[in-house]
Image (cartoon, rainbow, N blue to C red; front, side):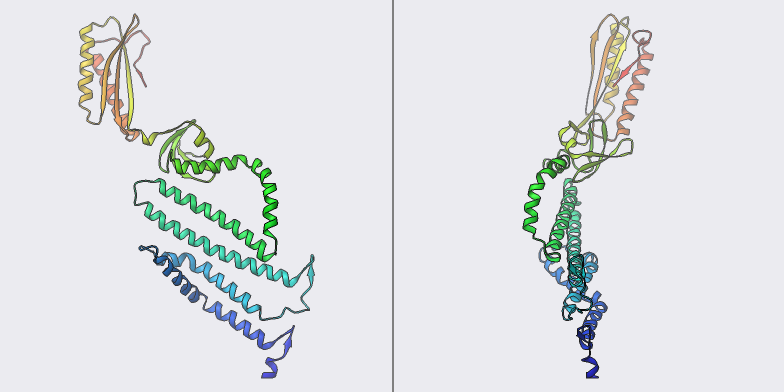
Length: 360
């Protein structure tokens, strides 16, 4: 039996092959258990910082990528025990097959590690997002999503640099030096994208609007659903999904409708100049009495604003606390109908044959 174990095939003994296969098989079988043990160890680190730490959610997020990372690391370490067979060490495109396999293994290992880090970022973002939802300020929610995406992009860049450094032995220093020269040209080519990225930071820190606000920018009115690295997504009043570059959101005149304290409406009544003054006074009186009965109104005014040869002009102005559009339109309709009925009751004529009540 010992003679069989010491027999050499492709530069390694049978015993070495069995030992490596046993270690790899052992890790694969116990992969789930080992990854959960490591995940629990990470949980202890996070529990020291967060009292309301959701251990179950954290384990579900990291156990799969952590298990793959452990299997890859153990496989690479175990395979280092074996000598690469000279018969297979051929050269492909100036690179030996052994170095190619090693580069692939290191690349997979780095990718698995970055995957674990990305899952941890997702978990931290979920915890912070859950806390932010308990506050009234909705800007924190979108800020968490923004920095989560930004950290993922940075981790992807770091992972790529690690692969170039350790898998392909590329000198990152010379690469960064070359990129600094090319960076100016790239920055000019991507100037608009960089401006949008900078504008996204301006939006988050200056806070002209936040997620959930009703805004009007240029010719677009709608609800802000998401603020990204490049653009802001708005659900328009036509129920379409519009992407507006962040630079335009910052540079354009933006009306944050959600922040207004009151909604204003006015009704301009143009009546015939032949109307006697007592009827004008009666009309103004009844309009004021009607407005006083609407408890939702904050401020209202009725003015006799103009006298000319064509018409007498009476302005009705009222303000409502910021409310749903349906409620606003309902009160406006009530006022219009009452004004029309009062004009008919007092037998007042509208100015001119083609004149109508003008509303704004």
